[in-house]
Image (cartoon, rainbow, N blue to C red; front, side):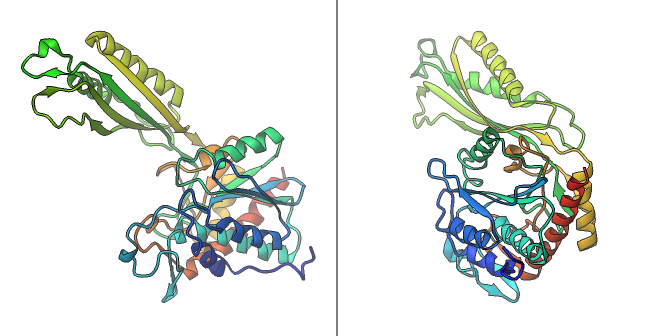
Length: 389
């Protein structure tokens, strides 16, 4: 594709086009079509990779190394009551220079900013190496058939990605003040204690699961998992629900259930924590004589992208573009970076996240344009650094 025929894409208009697609997980609503059309016009080879009912896209321009990837998601969380919004959540209305709409910050604005940056680079000439996009429609949901499946497929095919920027809204107070270089792991556990139902006046004829569950939860809650890890806070276990569902006042229940979540740093692995929970439950079962069942789902392991050429190049590019050197942080929840780290070094850089998932999610047009310019500087800096290796 010649420079003359390479379109320069306006990141603000692309943001609005994407917002107009009501892509609430798992619906795509045409959002991936909008993105594919823009990337095809820029000379990318686009490959749709659907898994189950989820739309995914891997697009690449060039075959040479290094391959710098941008990852993100077109799916969004539900809007909540539409009447509570000051503008339609999928109308992408602009008022006083601010774009309103679900996904404006998380993260359709980030995707559009990177596309705009790539278009300007290509209009000037060929970049060093290759550029690629890994976009999913399953980040805000269970995340079972999105980035995780795409990464597995790319690894099986031998696709090489040398570094990846995830466009999550990582900035805290002002654009560029923070990048995410790691994330804590997340483990959910469901606990069921099986007792025997009976009359409260005849406890000898029943087996109450409630106190067994209460003692087990108290023991788990009292245990200190660790004192922290370099760049990470201490791991924490939180009891998220306790359910017995007994409407009667004179019945000992047959079952008692609870759920907990552990956010853990690299001191632990998901399997290690599961083993410990199973041991604790086994001891409680042996002491009480009641059967205790545990189900576990580890949605991501903890990871850390170490300081070095990649992280340093991004920090320097952001500082030169925005006048602030971003803090390298591991705060917050999980992101799809937890899957991409199996392919290559990964970090997150994006918009200010203060209105994400809120009513009237919004982003200033100027911030989208500033992020796009910063992404342009990042692309140039990272590809130059990677090519020099």
